[in-house]
Length: 388
Ligand code: CMP
Image 1 (tube, rainbow, N blue to C red):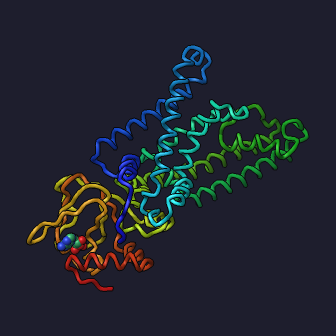
Image 2 (image 1 turned 90 degrees about the horizontal axis):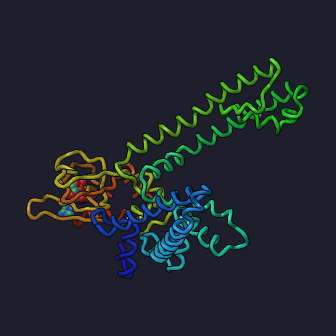
């Protein structure tokens, strides 16, 4: 695998911002500070909308906005500068790496979060309405919140089913609007005279909100309203159920959330492009270990290989124990050779491991000859003959 050459200052800033090490107090402090800053900023935006508070505390609100706007700008600039440190971008020219980084959804959120600062205080063409975008800063928390990231994963994983629900809901809305238009248009032409007008009633009824500002008055109209409300209940329960079960599956599948940057940092995946990393990410699950915990035991059946995201482990060997650290992998020998574990491996420090199932590992190696060559070479160097 190519050795990573990087700028030491840039590397350190990258590590601090992207949380490479779970045990680094500086990383924790910086992340905590950024999380607090986001929370204070969003609270200030909300409170600022109350005129009496705005009159009384205008200056503190302004100071919070100026300070956090400046810090978010520095943070964005620092992340952009560090983009070439991401392993998948290593082979790219720095400007290209930065462009790829800037197009990542999380980076777009970061950019949108700093824009209102400039639009408002430089007063670009009266774009004060863009101040609303300040609330967008809340989504910066996704980077630090495993729960939010899991929810986004769950929605993404179920996107087809959710789109299907949307299409069904749309169909029901059209049907209800047309039916009520047919029945009520002569009695209440101002409210149900056209299908678009009736659509407003249909969507308010289907979602079971029922403002009551537009109501059918004919008997048939009320039957249609009752059927629409019941259909709405059933149809809305569908996406809620889909998201809830996908969310709980996602939470249980993962000890901690495997993020794109976590996978991208693994040297084994250095030559994969961003799309390949995204697909490897789908196969990886995670596991946290406490010091002393046995991760694989000599002689056990092998079902997976492990990549160390953070922490240290030791391989217990007859002579001298071997230490492995972040970026290393183990458990490949038994999986490749389809035999039992050759040694016991236990955690030395708190560890975060990425777990790749045997089947997924074989698929991955089949599709990536260079990666397969590397894994087999490492296994051979560790004394395991491997079947190719
Ligand atoms: P596996 O046999 O699946 O499970 C135990 C793991 O320990 C093994 O795969 C290797 O990943 C690792 N291992 C075994 N021998 C060595 C060695 N000499 N050096 C480093 N790692 C090793």
